[in-house]
Length: 296
Ligand code: ATP
Image 1 (cartoon, rainbow, N blue to C red):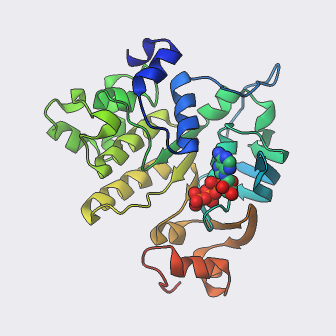
Image 2: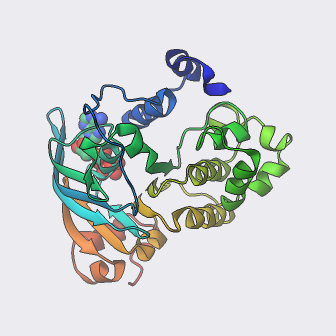
């Protein structure tokens, strides 16, 4: 198996350019399967996740001297989509990084189903989460191995089922070697939309109750976009979804939009409610979302 080598060698073999800090940290954790630079709370219990309710309570966090979250509070409810929006630097990615326990809050608490994640076993916190973005890392190996990373040891039927629900099975069967096809470095032999569907299949296989979705900023062609969106709809069903939203369709669909600015929540509500106000959300809609300025 690909991941049978020792961790340091695995990382060295990847030979990737970790240009984005968080991508790098995330990849380290994914590859090493263990905490780096994070001291485990002694005797910490595994997290129990019957529902997947995520609560931020007055969370403060700074990267060294740089403030990122300044008393952030919100709740993401099970089975619902909570969209995080806000200008660059508002702290949206930091919310994900803290949930994944790459970092620890300086004050306040983050709870999953009422349990402070700081007191829980880190591996069990991460097991409750799946992260998907347009640059979810694909390893230079086969389609099958890339999907199977969602749940090491998964059998062929489960891998196929995940690929079907991710709208990926058909294109995979069209590749030269089917599930044995090599994806190339960084998934370079696949199109952007195909890479995203592999990442979604991986997350479906992982079957975590809480989904962290960093929505694509670069556009796909409309056919490819429709396939990715259908796959995401399957992935989000029945989970708590936190999405850093870049598409108008997503914020319209969200049960709750949390508008962030400088590490705080400045507005909260549905698209209709927020768009009717003359606030930051309305201005962001006009500037950021494709299909901008659309009536609520
Ligand atoms: P964007 O939409 O541009 O991705 P964001 O809302 O996700 O922004 P964050 O990436 O969470 O915002 O950043 C919040 C603040 O923390 C910013 O001032 C940013 O410069 C800073 N920051 C983020 N990551 C780091 C880091 N690894 N080291 C130091 N400062 C950081």
